[in-house]
Amino acid sequence: MNDELKGEVTRGARALVVYPQMRGKGDLDPEARLDEAKGLALAIGLVIADAVAIPIREPRAGTLFGEGQIQNIGTACELNEAELIIVDGSLSAIQQRNLEEKLKRKVIDRTGLILEIFGERAATAEGRLQVELAHLDYQAGRLVRSWTHLERQRGGFGFLGGPGETQIEADRRMIRDRMAKIRRELEQVRRTRGLHRDRREKAPWPIVALVGYTNAGKSTLFNRLTGAGVMAQDLLFATLDPTMRAIRLPGVEKAILSDTVGFISDLPTQLVAAFRATLEEVTAADLILHVRDIANPDTDAQKRQVLDVLGDLGVLGSVVDDDVEEGAEPGIPIIELWNKWDLLGPEHAEKLHEAIAHRKDETIVPISAVTGEGCENLLEVVSHALTADSKVYSFLIPAADGQRLAFLHARGEVISEDDAGEGSEGPLLRLQVRLAERELGRFQAL
Image (tube, rainbow, N blue to C red):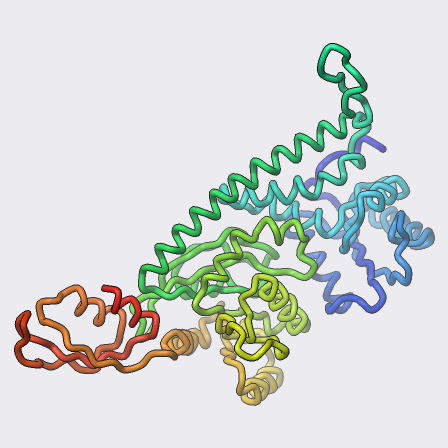
């Protein structure tokens, strides 16, 4: 293989994006899928020379595409001076190698492209570990594609020597050892995160998690609600690492808002596994806010992708599964936020308002994270959802019991507070307090 094919993807390279359109597969239409692939390429500074969708009737085991299609791709590269080919699908190591040999250009698939983005964007130590683990997992089966020295043998051990191990076996062993080390480090991160989560559960503050398709506007909304400076751009995967901030809600002293990594269709399995520790924050949430780009024509397909990931995490319960058995564990409540309302025309907005009115079984809030439209209403809806299980309780407490009195004032809504005479511990107070069920348990534990 030519030496120029061994290098990494470089910024400013001209890329041809090719979407293999499989018969009967895929929720997104070809144009939307090409737009998404171009967005991924732009996210790491590549220049889009051209983008084409190629229908695949029967995938070829060795090249995915047919010979005529490969010739067309080569011609398009020549005409557009493309030095890189991005196949917006999954390629086996053999397919990738064969395509590079036939086209004389570097070829990467969707997984490789997303890994490049994640490798560039990961900011925290945890994020870098997760990305490195995913990279190593991806590369382990592709060593033979990139190197020519891997069949050379190394000397054996002991007095007699022996055939030893080939270089590829040695490199794979080094990758396995490094992956094992990273997994141990991530396990420590997971334990630390678990300790933090346990500490938060002992605190009275509910957790609200933002989830959604990448570029749906989660980070923009997060910044508006919390005043944080999280990176928010019109860019796929602008933020990768989870961020948590405190917010104030009507009737709730404090809540924790968590911004998570954006989801995407066909997210590489290596990344789903690697980022499980990050996504575990969603499983600990009291409420999930699903941010949708309602102005995107494929918003329904994007919703299905998000719900698929949430289903894999086990947080949906019976929320979207009509076939769940009676008596099953309920899922975490989900509120849909129809974001980018400011981008809609009047007729489109009117139709969506009618759709919301007819969907009585779901909580949907139209918002614009950029202009702030609907955000005040959103806070009211979130507050109501977090206090929906609240009931009014009557407590008789000694006036000197400052800890329990302070708890009720801070964690509940004190409706009335009256003198109740004398008790064995001195003056008593009778309080009528609206309190959530989880807060009642914490109060009783004091």
